[in-house]
Amino acid sequence: MTLITRLARLAVLASVVALGACKPASEAPRNSVSSADGVLRDGSLSYAAEDYREAAPGKPGGTLRISTASDTTTLDVHSISHGNVQWLGRILFDCLLYQDEQGNISPWLAKSWDISPDGKTYTFHLRDDVTFSDGEKFNARAVQINLEHMRDPATKSPLAAAYIAPYVDGRIVDEYTFEAHLREPYSPFLDVLAQSWLSMISPRQILEAPKSIAEHAIGSGPFVLESYTRDQGATFVKRKGYNWAPPVTRHNGEAYLDRLELSIVPEPMIRFSALESGQSDFTVDAPAQNARAIRSNPDLQMSSRIRKANPFRSLTFNVEQFPFQDVQVRRAVAKAIDRDGLAWITGFGEYQPKGDFLAANTRYYDPAFKDVLAYDVAEANRILDQAGWSERDARGYRVKDGQRLSARLLMYETGAFPGSVAVAIQADLKKVGFELAIDLLPLAQVTERRYASNFQAIAGGYWHTNTPDGLYILYHSNAISTPKLIGQNAGRFRDDALDAALSAARRSTDPVELAALYRTAQQRLVETVPAVPVYESHVLVAYRKAVKGVIFDTSHNTPFFTSVWLDQEAR
Image (cartoon, rainbow, N blue to C red; front, side, top):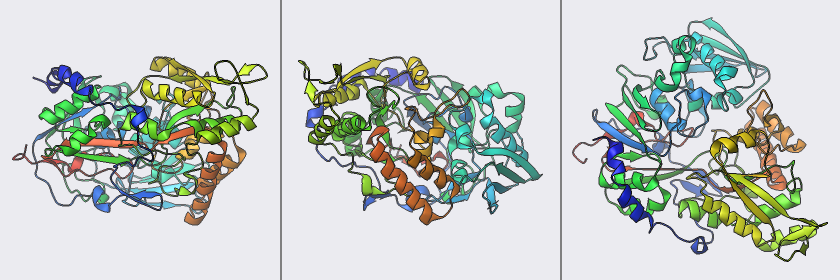
């Protein structure tokens, strides 16, 4: 019997358990504190170095049964922005570089690198002992082919292409030396090359069978894909001879596990029930509503961690449409939204409410602005009165010049942003006389309208990266979509001061200057309010105590399965 079948038989039990899992938003605690791992000091969050490296060698053998909530629908990591690539990419692929425990760049497939004085030429010195699982060599030609594939219009990349946008071309200096040429200085270049979406795929597959990457991707990673069925799952087997894990992880040689069996299980209660009953070993999407039960179970372990860069947004404003062209209205809406309540609805006490624009564990995060947009109904009302929306109609909504203060929120239903969150936002805004209607549509329609800028406000979303340059990706005017660019500045936000700070940060490598520039950017964002942050972007994983050697990826804070092993006696 497959894991999928066993999980399906638990559905009835799960539906019963779910009835007791909810707590009304009205009971949400004020100033709730996340139980996320890590140390919060002076507003900044850090994690122990031991979380990212092996403490001791593990025991080889065994099959790990993993569940996740959704499918990437393709294994071509260059062509998507799906969050599962963060951990899935580390199973099949390797990257040129890796971040260390402090977020600094360290070697992986590139042993070392040089940067020209003008910041526009990067020379990578590559390992000479790496192969892809189809026998192809990893070398300078492989790097060149991969970079071209990332930015090829046929790949339709919404992420990797944007991350290497300054890349012009490359030169093969010799078999294991590659020279990348940028059109302008771009200091996040090394950071983005450490992310899973920019992994190295077999150059033979890219050139000879690019369509096959989607369902049978070939990498140089610690596991090899055995089978993949869309929306059901995948199996991976240990790559024999693998011996090039990132030095930061302190893992030597092959992965410990013989096999990984991944199942796609959208229903959170089924993922929990399967884990609790021993039908599965590990879930990379632990249900927040079951966190208390997981933590109290002596057979289970849970970890709650925060992704770097951009926190989760409750909504993004289209600043070119009424009424959000007015910064006063945007600011009032931000202060009218009860983040503690929303964090409880989705995170059940696991999520850390957030009112500023960089995650607390991001390099150059400045906590000075964390309370500027704090929940304050009285202040929201005062701002709207000052903006000329002082009159009310018979239903209590604000009006000016005969027009009601109203907007429509575009959204689709997801576990990260359920309809209940939109309804809670709607109720919050009604308290200050703002009418919010909800357009709940299929994902395809939401995506089409998003890129066409056909909305007033759009719900939810996070955009993860391992660098504060994530602010550029979401809020710089150059990130607005065009016929040639899939941009992430969905609200078409433009601010000269913000653009100047973020552009200058891309050109700088001086830590003191970067701290000042990103401080300016963070301050400008809470002043201009292009979106409403709501809580940190959390990674919740849970696993049985028999699972050992769990460490986390330094870029994504997701599990790094190369080091995982099974205590067969405890299973």
